[in-house]
Length: 111
Image (cartoon, rainbow, N blue to C red; front, side, top):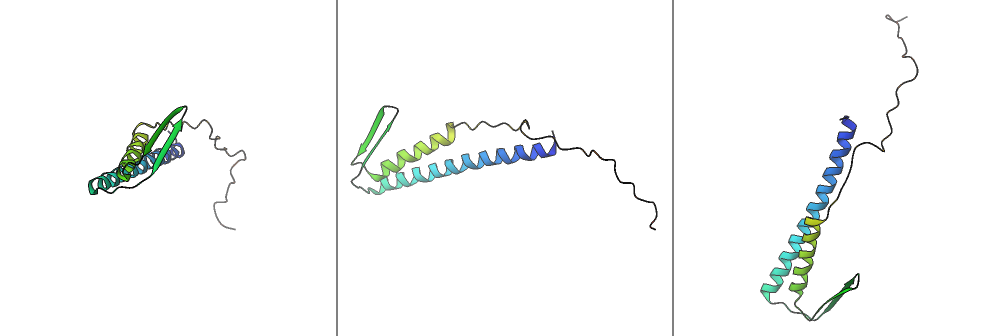
């Protein structure tokens, strides 16, 4: 494999790994915050509702810890199950141009 394509491949893999790790760490942190809020017994009044493709969901007058816990689990599911396919085969990278002129011949000794 060409060194240039190897570098492109490595950059792509590291970017995807960074994305997955960032979402995973955010999910763990938010889940932990939700757990701590639930253990401390912090309560609050709110209404949360969502709909996606005809499916509706609602959460009303629950503890904020439960909301954070559910959001954290959602982020963890995205981090674990969201596929990020990629291809770095070099199909879209143009060929490097080869020199078309003859190389310049330098004299053996200075004038």
